Image (cartoon, rainbow, N blue to C red; front, side):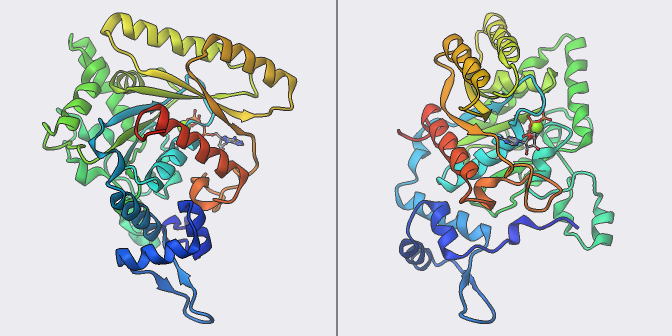
Length: 364
Ligand SMILES: Nc1ncnc2c1ncn2[C@@H]1O[C@H](COP(=O)(O)OP(=O)(O)OP(=O)(O)O)[C@@H](O)[C@H]1O
Ligand SMILES: [Mg+2]
């Protein structure tokens, strides 16, 4: 059975580290916010924080500070690279967690029918509700609906965001629109729309815009500061639609391989979007699998920073065994939460914080 991420207990020191504060102020905030924290049953009755407790504290802290970015415009971003296995999902899941720890309200949408993001938050996209019951797994851990169900005119029954969204770490943690294999139908639907002469490229953009404005009862996203898509490497219509709906495209590049070709493809897609629709997301490049000691990597870095000077984020993530060595061995979990003291978690935090500033979600 899958390890339940949400129930992993944290001691007060770990909580302080996750929130970037002291043990004393964590204790103070717990009392102030009236958050119920359980205690160890035997021994010194140490406080054991759930992940949900931690996000509640993060939320409490940010609302105390005046709810930070609430007055600013909602940001929409897609994590995308036209290349497989470069760290899109890893980056997306960690960003979502880090953003929420900063008190930012996050909705993350799994736009890949392979559902790695969904898995990384502890949901099993292949399990039916009946199988879950039989296996003693909570039916909430299964996936019954996905982003397709939120699209107006969805032929298999439209649902509301509230019905589709999952909250693995409670209300104050990141909210997730999960996916499963049938998300592929959305691509088919958009292709049909094109054949019927409709402008399906903008279907997702329109949905998001109406959501921001509170004009769609099924999809009201006014509560979120940021909406993140985790896109598949495929150059399909869903990805295209998400890009056209986005203010930013966050693109991890694997510095291990030659990656300039993928980047130049992506940048040509963006230019073409700009020509055709008079809009395209701003590109932000994040170097992953980075190794400053390798000559070839540094050579690539030179080429990329020269060609995409403005897009390059000056924070990188090194290759580390922490990533594949995830907690339950079955799926990669967000390291910023579950291995907060690792070097990789530190790098991910820096990347996330730099992105928040870059995208104007918080002030620098
Ligand atoms: N910096 C890193 N060091 C080591 N392993 C990493 C690093 N970043 C990601 N990985 C590992 O690489 C694998 C692929 O990562 P991930 O699934 O995030 O890529 P992706 O771009 O989303 O893939 P896909 O194109 O299939 O959607 C995962 O096993 C992940 O743990
Ligand atoms: Mg992925």
